Length: 256
Ligand code: NDX
Image (cartoon, rainbow, N blue to C red; front, side):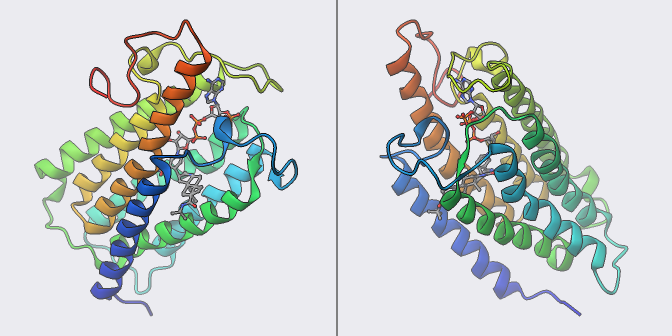
Protein backbone atom coordinates (compact mmCIF):
# COMPACT_ATOMS: atom_id res chain seq x y z
CA UNK A 1 0.00 0.00 0.00
CA UNK A 2 1.00 3.62 -0.51
CA UNK A 3 2.64 5.75 2.09
CA UNK A 4 3.88 9.32 2.42
CA UNK A 5 7.22 10.23 0.89
CA UNK A 6 7.86 13.84 1.95
CA UNK A 7 10.74 14.20 -0.51
CA UNK A 8 8.41 13.22 -3.38
CA UNK A 9 5.95 15.93 -2.33
CA UNK A 10 8.79 18.44 -2.11
CA UNK A 11 10.16 17.50 -5.54
CA UNK A 12 6.77 17.58 -7.29
CA UNK A 13 5.91 20.93 -5.67
CA UNK A 14 9.25 22.40 -6.69
CA UNK A 15 8.71 21.25 -10.28
CA UNK A 16 5.24 22.83 -10.23
CA UNK A 17 6.82 26.10 -9.06
CA UNK A 18 9.41 25.87 -11.83
CA UNK A 19 6.68 25.24 -14.44
CA UNK A 20 4.89 28.31 -13.10
CA UNK A 21 7.96 30.47 -13.68
CA UNK A 22 8.41 28.95 -17.14
CA UNK A 23 4.83 29.87 -17.98
CA UNK A 24 5.24 33.37 -16.65
CA UNK A 25 8.27 33.96 -18.87
CA UNK A 26 6.52 32.43 -21.91
CA UNK A 27 3.10 34.02 -21.53
CA UNK A 28 3.96 37.53 -20.42
CA UNK A 29 5.03 38.31 -23.99
CA UNK A 30 2.69 36.08 -26.03
CA UNK A 31 -0.61 34.59 -24.81
CA UNK A 32 -1.21 30.81 -24.77
CA UNK A 33 -2.78 30.02 -28.14
CA UNK A 34 -6.36 29.04 -27.52
CA UNK A 35 -9.67 30.91 -27.55
CA UNK A 36 -9.37 34.51 -28.70
CA UNK A 37 -5.57 34.24 -28.93
CA UNK A 38 -5.36 31.34 -31.35
CA UNK A 39 -3.52 32.14 -34.55
CA UNK A 40 -6.18 31.86 -37.20
CA UNK A 41 -3.98 30.94 -40.14
CA UNK A 42 -2.15 27.88 -38.93
CA UNK A 43 -3.65 24.55 -37.93
CA UNK A 44 -7.17 24.59 -39.32
CA UNK A 45 -7.34 20.96 -38.23
CA UNK A 46 -5.92 19.52 -35.03
CA UNK A 47 -8.70 20.85 -32.85
CA UNK A 48 -11.42 19.24 -30.77
CA UNK A 49 -14.87 20.68 -29.92
CA UNK A 50 -14.58 22.76 -26.73
CA UNK A 51 -17.03 20.46 -24.96
CA UNK A 52 -14.93 17.27 -25.41
CA UNK A 53 -11.64 19.08 -24.91
CA UNK A 54 -12.52 20.64 -21.55
CA UNK A 55 -14.15 17.45 -20.34
CA UNK A 56 -11.13 15.26 -21.21
CA UNK A 57 -8.58 17.77 -20.01
CA UNK A 58 -10.09 18.45 -16.59
CA UNK A 59 -11.34 14.91 -15.84
CA UNK A 60 -8.03 13.67 -14.28
CA UNK A 61 -8.08 16.55 -11.79
CA UNK A 62 -11.35 15.16 -10.50
CA UNK A 63 -10.71 11.44 -10.97
CA UNK A 64 -7.19 11.06 -9.58
CA UNK A 65 -7.79 12.64 -6.15
CA UNK A 66 -11.29 11.09 -5.95
CA UNK A 67 -9.78 7.63 -6.52
CA UNK A 68 -6.95 8.26 -4.07
CA UNK A 69 -9.56 9.26 -1.51
CA UNK A 70 -11.82 6.28 -2.19
CA UNK A 71 -9.12 3.62 -2.48
CA UNK A 72 -6.88 4.62 0.38
CA UNK A 73 -5.71 1.51 2.18
CA UNK A 74 -5.94 1.13 5.03
CA UNK A 75 -8.79 3.70 5.25
CA UNK A 76 -7.77 6.57 7.47
CA UNK A 77 -10.66 7.94 9.48
CA UNK A 78 -8.74 10.71 11.20
CA UNK A 79 -8.30 13.54 10.71
CA UNK A 80 -11.45 14.85 9.12
CA UNK A 81 -9.64 17.95 7.81
CA UNK A 82 -7.71 16.06 5.12
CA UNK A 83 -10.74 14.41 3.59
CA UNK A 84 -12.74 17.63 3.75
CA UNK A 85 -10.00 19.58 1.99
CA UNK A 86 -9.59 16.88 -0.64
CA UNK A 87 -13.34 17.07 -1.23
CA UNK A 88 -13.08 20.83 -1.82
CA UNK A 89 -10.52 20.23 -4.57
CA UNK A 90 -12.71 17.51 -6.14
CA UNK A 91 -15.78 19.74 -5.85
CA UNK A 92 -14.17 22.42 -8.02
CA UNK A 93 -13.10 19.87 -10.61
CA UNK A 94 -16.51 18.22 -10.53
CA UNK A 95 -17.87 21.57 -11.70
CA UNK A 96 -15.07 22.07 -14.24
CA UNK A 97 -15.40 18.51 -15.65
CA UNK A 98 -19.08 17.62 -15.51
CA UNK A 99 -20.84 20.99 -15.63
CA UNK A 100 -18.71 23.68 -17.32
CA UNK A 101 -17.96 21.74 -20.56
CA UNK A 102 -21.60 20.90 -21.23
CA UNK A 103 -22.63 24.55 -21.31
CA UNK A 104 -19.59 26.10 -22.97
CA UNK A 105 -20.01 27.94 -26.25
CA UNK A 106 -16.27 28.19 -26.79
CA UNK A 107 -14.34 27.66 -30.02
CA UNK A 108 -12.68 24.29 -30.73
CA UNK A 109 -9.59 23.71 -28.60
CA UNK A 110 -6.10 22.91 -30.04
CA UNK A 111 -5.13 19.23 -29.61
CA UNK A 112 -1.56 20.02 -28.69
CA UNK A 113 -2.58 22.18 -25.74
CA UNK A 114 -5.20 19.61 -24.81
CA UNK A 115 -2.40 17.06 -24.51
CA UNK A 116 -0.30 19.24 -22.19
CA UNK A 117 -3.39 20.37 -20.29
CA UNK A 118 -4.34 16.74 -19.59
CA UNK A 119 -0.82 15.87 -18.46
CA UNK A 120 -0.91 18.87 -16.17
CA UNK A 121 -4.25 17.86 -14.65
CA UNK A 122 -2.99 14.30 -13.96
CA UNK A 123 0.16 15.70 -12.35
CA UNK A 124 -1.59 18.27 -10.20
CA UNK A 125 -4.50 15.99 -9.31
CA UNK A 126 -2.04 13.41 -8.08
CA UNK A 127 0.10 15.90 -6.15
CA UNK A 128 -2.79 17.58 -4.32
CA UNK A 129 -4.64 14.31 -3.68
CA UNK A 130 -1.59 12.32 -2.62
CA UNK A 131 -0.46 15.05 -0.23
CA UNK A 132 -3.86 15.48 1.42
CA UNK A 133 -4.67 11.77 1.66
CA UNK A 134 -1.28 10.34 2.60
CA UNK A 135 0.83 13.14 4.06
CA UNK A 136 -1.16 15.99 5.57
CA UNK A 137 -1.69 16.04 9.31
CA UNK A 138 -3.92 18.54 11.02
CA UNK A 139 -4.77 19.02 14.66
CA UNK A 140 -8.29 17.91 15.58
CA UNK A 141 -9.45 21.51 15.93
CA UNK A 142 -8.15 22.57 12.47
CA UNK A 143 -11.74 23.33 11.43
CA UNK A 144 -11.77 26.25 13.85
CA UNK A 145 -8.26 27.49 13.00
CA UNK A 146 -8.22 30.98 11.46
CA UNK A 147 -6.25 29.63 8.45
CA UNK A 148 -8.88 27.01 7.72
CA UNK A 149 -11.87 29.32 8.17
CA UNK A 150 -10.46 32.33 6.29
CA UNK A 151 -9.06 30.09 3.53
CA UNK A 152 -12.37 28.29 3.14
CA UNK A 153 -14.16 31.62 2.94
CA UNK A 154 -11.80 32.85 0.20
CA UNK A 155 -12.17 29.53 -1.64
CA UNK A 156 -15.97 29.80 -1.64
CA UNK A 157 -15.90 33.47 -2.58
CA UNK A 158 -13.48 32.81 -5.46
CA UNK A 159 -15.47 29.83 -6.68
CA UNK A 160 -18.65 31.93 -6.64
CA UNK A 161 -17.00 34.70 -8.65
CA UNK A 162 -15.48 32.17 -11.08
CA UNK A 163 -18.74 30.29 -11.76
CA UNK A 164 -20.79 33.49 -12.01
CA UNK A 165 -18.28 35.01 -14.45
CA UNK A 166 -18.16 31.81 -16.57
CA UNK A 167 -21.94 32.14 -16.80
CA UNK A 168 -21.83 35.80 -17.85
CA UNK A 169 -19.29 34.97 -20.59
CA UNK A 170 -21.43 32.13 -21.88
CA UNK A 171 -24.50 34.36 -22.10
CA UNK A 172 -22.68 36.70 -24.49
CA UNK A 173 -23.24 34.14 -27.26
CA UNK A 174 -26.20 32.33 -28.76
CA UNK A 175 -25.56 28.62 -29.38
CA UNK A 176 -23.32 28.23 -32.45
CA UNK A 177 -22.04 31.80 -32.32
CA UNK A 178 -18.27 32.36 -32.09
CA UNK A 179 -17.95 36.16 -32.00
CA UNK A 180 -16.47 38.20 -29.14
CA UNK A 181 -18.40 40.89 -27.30
CA UNK A 182 -17.73 43.18 -24.35
CA UNK A 183 -18.45 41.26 -21.10
CA UNK A 184 -20.86 43.12 -18.83
CA UNK A 185 -22.08 42.76 -15.27
CA UNK A 186 -20.76 41.14 -12.12
CA UNK A 187 -17.04 41.66 -11.57
CA UNK A 188 -16.62 42.32 -15.31
CA UNK A 189 -17.72 45.84 -14.39
CA UNK A 190 -14.28 46.24 -12.82
CA UNK A 191 -11.93 43.79 -14.60
CA UNK A 192 -11.56 42.07 -17.99
CA UNK A 193 -10.51 38.79 -16.38
CA UNK A 194 -13.26 38.34 -13.78
CA UNK A 195 -13.35 34.53 -14.18
CA UNK A 196 -9.56 34.41 -13.76
CA UNK A 197 -9.66 36.68 -10.72
CA UNK A 198 -12.19 34.31 -9.10
CA UNK A 199 -10.09 31.25 -9.90
CA UNK A 200 -6.93 32.82 -8.44
CA UNK A 201 -8.70 33.89 -5.22
CA UNK A 202 -10.14 30.39 -5.01
CA UNK A 203 -6.78 28.59 -5.16
CA UNK A 204 -5.05 30.98 -2.78
CA UNK A 205 -7.95 30.37 -0.40
CA UNK A 206 -7.40 26.64 -0.81
CA UNK A 207 -3.68 27.08 -0.13
CA UNK A 208 -4.39 29.01 3.07
CA UNK A 209 -6.99 26.47 4.22
CA UNK A 210 -4.62 23.53 3.64
CA UNK A 211 -1.52 25.50 4.66
CA UNK A 212 0.55 23.24 2.43
CA UNK A 213 3.42 23.55 -0.04
CA UNK A 214 1.67 21.70 -2.92
CA UNK A 215 -1.40 23.93 -2.66
CA UNK A 216 0.66 27.14 -2.56
CA UNK A 217 2.65 25.88 -5.57
CA UNK A 218 -0.62 25.28 -7.45
CA UNK A 219 -2.02 28.71 -6.49
CA UNK A 220 1.22 30.27 -7.77
CA UNK A 221 0.96 28.19 -10.98
CA UNK A 222 -2.62 29.40 -11.49
CA UNK A 223 -1.51 33.00 -11.02
CA UNK A 224 1.32 32.59 -13.56
CA UNK A 225 -0.94 30.74 -16.03
CA UNK A 226 -4.09 32.86 -16.14
CA UNK A 227 -2.72 36.15 -14.74
CA UNK A 228 -0.88 36.91 -18.02
CA UNK A 229 -3.91 35.65 -19.94
CA UNK A 230 -6.12 38.24 -18.22
CA UNK A 231 -3.65 40.92 -19.29
CA UNK A 232 -3.73 39.70 -22.92
CA UNK A 233 -7.57 39.55 -22.87
CA UNK A 234 -7.56 43.14 -21.62
CA UNK A 235 -5.24 44.30 -24.42
CA UNK A 236 -7.35 42.43 -26.98
CA UNK A 237 -10.51 44.22 -25.80
CA UNK A 238 -8.86 47.65 -25.81
CA UNK A 239 -7.61 47.03 -29.36
CA UNK A 240 -10.89 45.57 -30.66
CA UNK A 241 -13.55 47.78 -29.07
CA UNK A 242 -13.14 51.57 -29.23
CA UNK A 243 -15.98 51.93 -26.71
CA UNK A 244 -14.38 49.60 -24.15
CA UNK A 245 -14.95 50.94 -20.59
CA UNK A 246 -11.92 53.08 -19.74
CA UNK A 247 -11.94 52.47 -15.99
CA UNK A 248 -11.87 48.67 -16.31
CA UNK A 249 -8.65 46.97 -15.15
CA UNK A 250 -7.10 43.71 -16.39
CA UNK A 251 -7.23 41.40 -13.36
CA UNK A 252 -7.46 43.06 -9.94
CA UNK A 253 -10.34 45.53 -9.35
CA UNK A 254 -9.14 49.19 -9.07
CA UNK A 255 -5.47 48.10 -9.10
CA UNK A 256 -4.13 46.34 -12.18
N1 NDX B 1 -6.96 24.45 -18.20
C1 NDX B 1 -5.86 25.38 -16.25
N2 NDX B 1 2.33 25.06 -20.18
C2 NDX B 1 -5.86 24.96 -18.92
C3 NDX B 1 -5.88 24.71 -20.36
C4 NDX B 1 -4.64 25.19 -21.08
O1 NDX B 1 -7.96 24.42 -16.18
O2 NDX B 1 1.90 24.09 -22.15
C5 NDX B 1 -4.60 25.21 -16.80
C6 NDX B 1 -7.05 24.83 -16.80
C7 NDX B 1 -3.40 24.66 -20.40
C8 NDX B 1 -3.36 24.98 -18.90
C9 NDX B 1 -4.60 24.53 -18.17
C10 NDX B 1 -2.07 24.44 -18.27
C11 NDX B 1 -0.81 24.94 -18.98
C12 NDX B 1 -0.88 24.68 -20.45
C13 NDX B 1 -2.16 25.30 -20.99
C14 NDX B 1 -1.96 25.25 -22.49
C15 NDX B 1 -0.47 25.53 -22.64
C16 NDX B 1 0.15 25.44 -21.25
C17 NDX B 1 -0.79 23.17 -20.73
C18 NDX B 1 -4.62 23.00 -17.96
C19 NDX B 1 1.53 24.80 -21.25
C20 NDX B 1 3.66 24.58 -19.96
C21 NDX B 1 4.62 25.41 -20.78
C22 NDX B 1 3.96 24.72 -18.49
C23 NDX B 1 3.78 23.10 -20.33
O3 NDX B 1 -14.26 30.96 -28.20
P1 NDX B 1 -13.61 31.02 -26.87
O4 NDX B 1 -13.07 29.69 -26.42
O5 NDX B 1 -12.60 32.12 -26.74
O6 NDX B 1 -14.87 31.36 -25.87
C24 NDX B 1 -14.66 31.66 -24.51
C25 NDX B 1 -15.75 32.57 -23.98
N3 NDX B 1 -15.43 33.99 -24.12
C26 NDX B 1 -16.18 34.91 -24.72
N4 NDX B 1 -17.35 34.81 -25.40
C27 NDX B 1 -17.88 35.96 -25.94
N5 NDX B 1 -17.30 37.18 -25.83
C28 NDX B 1 -16.13 37.31 -25.15
N6 NDX B 1 -15.55 38.51 -25.04
C29 NDX B 1 -15.52 36.14 -24.58
N7 NDX B 1 -14.38 35.93 -23.87
C30 NDX B 1 -14.34 34.61 -23.61
O7 NDX B 1 -15.83 32.31 -22.58
C31 NDX B 1 -14.78 30.47 -23.59
O8 NDX B 1 -15.81 29.62 -24.02
C32 NDX B 1 -15.19 31.07 -22.24
C33 NDX B 1 -14.01 31.33 -21.32
O9 NDX B 1 -12.97 31.90 -22.03
P2 NDX B 1 -11.67 32.52 -21.31
O10 NDX B 1 -10.66 32.73 -22.36
O11 NDX B 1 -12.07 33.70 -20.49
O12 NDX B 1 -11.25 31.37 -20.27
P3 NDX B 1 -10.37 30.03 -20.51
O13 NDX B 1 -8.93 30.38 -20.52
O14 NDX B 1 -10.94 29.27 -21.63
O15 NDX B 1 -10.65 29.28 -19.11
C34 NDX B 1 -11.90 28.73 -18.83
C35 NDX B 1 -12.02 28.52 -17.33
C36 NDX B 1 -11.88 29.81 -16.52
O16 NDX B 1 -12.87 29.85 -15.54
C37 NDX B 1 -10.48 29.73 -15.91
O17 NDX B 1 -10.45 30.36 -14.67
C38 NDX B 1 -10.24 28.23 -15.79
O18 NDX B 1 -10.98 27.64 -16.84
N8 NDX B 1 -8.82 27.93 -15.92
C39 NDX B 1 -8.20 27.97 -17.12
C40 NDX B 1 -6.89 27.64 -17.23
C41 NDX B 1 -6.16 27.05 -16.10
C42 NDX B 1 -6.77 27.24 -14.85
C43 NDX B 1 -8.11 27.56 -14.77
C44 NDX B 1 -5.92 27.11 -13.65
O19 NDX B 1 -4.69 27.18 -13.74
N9 NDX B 1 -6.48 26.89 -12.47
